[in-house]
Length: 236
Ligand code: NDP
Image (tube, rainbow, N blue to C red; front, top):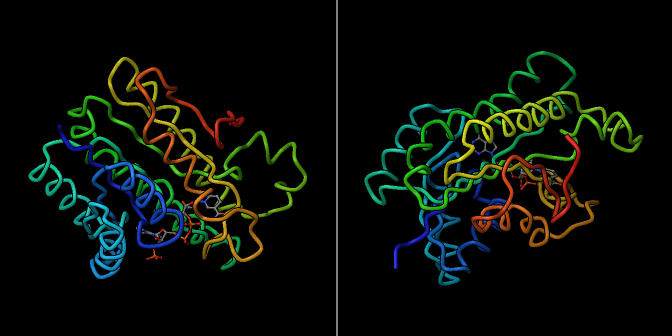
């Protein structure tokens, strides 16, 4: 049987590594992207020790050379890509409320996901069931931050704007891909105990990975162009 191939960005730790683990446990070959080859290799070794088909890929999503090389390697090795999880993310609002922080946050959270997706879209189209998952956040839900005081008070403008933009692009891409074999959805993992989520977060990493994993493995009659947490539709 033909192998199912998944590429996950920011897969050296946190939710991304766990997405790799959970997809790998389903027999999927997982390509673990990380900013440095050393980090990607360490993550791949960890999952290989758990009998998962995991391979490292050097992939800083802000580096066009890394993106080109990753796409070329996947094309040469497999000729297709079944699953892309744009999980890499950054949060810099603690550095200040200014345009430099906004720009650097967008570089990773939107431009990185966009550039990588553009580079591998032909490989996802070569899959019988291409799936793109954009790891967003409830803070990217404009409707939620306007209506819910808890999220309104978060005051993280760069992070919020970058995830709202990621959501808007997810919707746009789903329209572009309508009628093809490629589905694209965004998700909120929950407030998860990672380096980004912090120790006060309420969700363990395995639960935090679950929404992305389920969107990565959607059946052919599954949704596209949605924003989900678990099986619930979130407002844009
Ligand atoms: P972590 O900080 O644990 O992981 C973030 C990952 O992104 C790391 O692997 C990091 O690499 C990687 N990354 C950052 N910049 C780049 C880059 N330029 N290129 C490639 N990789 C990069 O956070 P989480 O696991 O919690 O976050 C994963 C995703 O989930 C993010 O998109 C985040 O916004 C989202 N999210 C998380 C929530 C939470 O509560 N934890 C809530 C809502 C959304 P490195 O180790 O090199 O820094």
